[in-house]
Image (cartoon, rainbow, N blue to C red; front, top):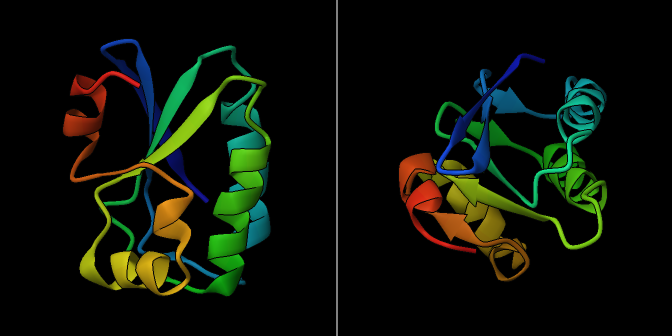
Length: 111
């Protein structure tokens, strides 16, 4: 599972460079997120604009990543494609995560 990161306005942006987060890659995703979230940043944004499909395993992996956050840290989501957005709304996970239109708009807003 390929993730790329960059800083923007004091926010760490993590971009998922894959079209799917499903059972086949969920463990790899969690492992990579554990590595990326090892820093002491108070705010991370997971950019999902390249992800066209997510299943329950992928959703669980994102929730697991949120639980890896250090105390006081925040994991937000951005760039959800329509299919991924639908999964988050149907499972009511949109009430758990702050969801932004894009990584750029997330970085521009204060936590």
